[in-house]
Length: 218
Image 1 (cartoon, one colour):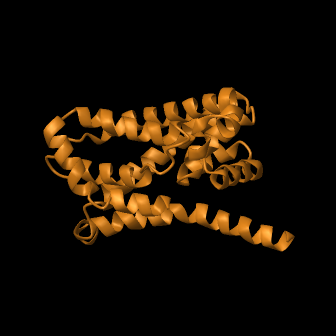
Image 2 (cartoon, helix red, strand yellow):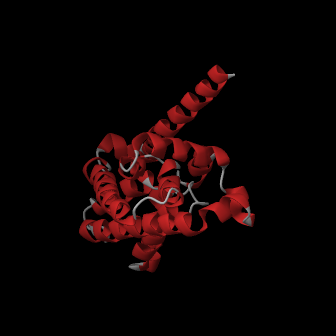
């Protein structure tokens, strides 16, 4: 469902974002900040774009005469990613049990996503904060799970910052270097969908492994 939603919302990103930028100028940076902040910081919004948005921003910044600044994007989006995960951690630590058991919002927190995140965190420990950055859906649930698990905040912060810097740098860098290659540029919508699909593969594989394990236990 999440992949279908992303597929329907973002095939036209390559035209919508430049149009928004032309109309609202610097406010575009605020919009991009909010998208990354909400995707990483609010556990009920795991379906928002992350990897594809970074790739698109990098490719637009690489275009001659384009007003998007790569250094400014890099700083703003890293701050958004760090702040988002920190908020998500605090939500999980102080309200995780209530949100998943009693809150009216619990219906927006899919149990299978939460379970996958818990498994991922249990398997990788502190490193899950870093590794989870590169996995859609898991990326949104990992800091929440870390908070619920009462992970030491200082340890969380270090992995949070390292993960955010790596994720934003790789995403923007890939778009900047390859987003305007002719074959990529001429099939940009397909490339965006491919980026989303490939980035979702780890979460899909994890879900299939869990399903297979459950069947074996039966």
